[in-house]
Image (spheres, rainbow, N blue to C red):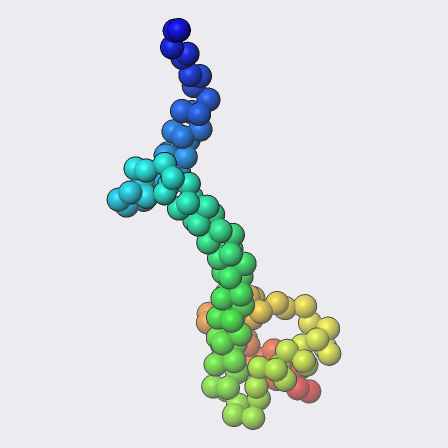
Length: 117
């Protein structure tokens, strides 16, 4: 009985996975089974950390705004600033407020003083 020649589809799938894991260290870039496990783990981590990055940046912006506000007036805090911003219908998000707090603190102080009045 003659030998059956296999197709190229499985080999093409494995080489595609190997290209994904080419930068991994050790067996994670050489053995097919561990490559597939590490690829799955890497994709799960990437998906999780995309949401995590948004959370982390929001926390950073809040910390920067709070530090800038407390440096100006001891009694004025972040939560009161955000509450007064919404009450005055000023549409400034936390990212913009944090950039203002870093680059131009006087502008942030003017905004907070206008809201208090």
